[in-house]
Amino acid sequence: MTAVRIPPTLRTEVGGERQVEAHGSTAREVLEDLARRYPALESRLFEDGELAPFVNVYVGGEDVRTLAGLDTPVDCLPLILLPAMAGGC
Amino acid sequence: MLTTADSLLSLVGNTPLVELSRLQSGRVRLYAKLEGQNPTGSIKDRVAKAMIEAAEASGELEPGRRLLEPTSGNTGISLALVAKLKGYPLTCVLPENATKERRQLLELYGADIVLSPGEEGSNGAVRKALELAAADPSYYMPFQYANAANPRAHYEGTGAEIAAALDRVDVLVAGLGTGGTLMGAGERLRERFPEVVVAAAEPLHGDPVMGLRSLEDGYVPPILDVSKLDRKVLVSNDESVRALRELLDAEGIFGGVSAGAVVHVARRLARELEDGVVVCVLADAGWKYLSAGFWTAPDVEESMERTVWW
Image (cartoon, rainbow over all chains, first blue to last red; front, side, top):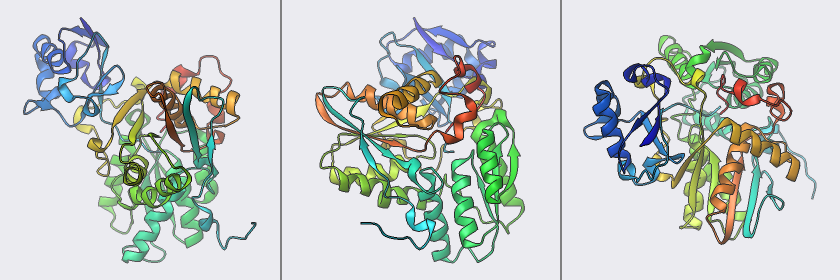
C-alpha cells in the first residue's frame, strides 16, 4: 500500500480525506488504482492518458516529471499530489 | 580597488560567492551566492532592472507609464526601486497574508498596493493582476512569470558570475518560483559544465494557501520549462526552517526562507556525490522575515502554513 497525500483542491473527489491509500509499483499504477477507487479523480489526474498539466506528483519528495514520469517506481515511498502553483515572490 | 557607482542600479548583481566550509562534508564543496547583497536585498533586483530596461529598449514602456505586477514581495520591492529611480508609478498586487515587512517596504518606496485573497496564494495575485491589466490598458505589466528578460537576467548575470568564479560546478540549486533563476543560470552553467545537475528546491505549501477552487486554477509560469530541470525536490516548512537556523548557527548567514530550502536540497544532493562542487543561490536575507519568528519561535511551522513564502 502506498500512502497518497491529497491536496485541498482534490479532497471533494475522495470524500474529504487528506490522505488515502492505493496499490501499485509505479506512479501510474498507484494513480490508476486511485482513480478506480474514486472515479471522480480520473478526469482530474489524467489528460489523454498522461498526467494532467496542473497536477504535480511527487515520489519521495521529488517531482516525477524530473524522474521517470508516470513510470517512476514507487518503492513504498509516500506519494504527494499537488496543484501547480505560481511561486516567485 | 574602491570605486564609486553612478546609481544604485549599477550595483545590481556581482554578488559574493562564499564557501560553506562548516556545512559541507567529505570532498564535496558547497558554495552560496548571496543574493541578499543586492541593493534592495534580493535576487529580484536583477529581474526588475532587466525587465524594465528591456521594455524601455523595445519602446513598449513609455516614460511615466504606470507599472503593475503581482508579487508577494521581493519583485515588488525591486520594481519599486527601479520605478522610483526611473520615474514610473507602480502598483503591486500582493496576497493579503504577505509579511508586514514586505508591505511596509513597498509602501515606503511609494508603491500602491492592491490585495488579493490570502487563501489563493500567488495564483490569486497573478489572476487579479491579469484582470486589472485586461481592464485598463494604460498599465504596463512586466509580468515576471512570462517575461524572457527574467531568465535572461540570470543567464547574463547570476549564471555567468558563477561560471566565472568556479572551475567546476556539479550541482546548481535554486528556489523554484517563476523559474527564472533555474532556467537562466542553469542554461549558462550547462554551456560551461555540460554535466551540471540543475536542481529546484520547491516549497511544500500549507493547505491554507494552496487554493480552494479547482485544479483548473493551477498555474505553470510560461518561462518555466520543467524538462530543463534535472531534479525538483519538495521542501517542507520544517525542513526549510531547520536549514535556515543551521545556516545562521554554522556559517553566520542570515538567510530568507527559500535560502533554508535551497541549502536543505543542496546538502541532500551533496550526499549523493563522492566529490564535487554544489552551488546554492540564496535569493534573499532574513530581514523581511523577522516578524515570522523563524529563528526563535518553537513551533513556527504551523503559522508558516498560512503564507506563501516564495
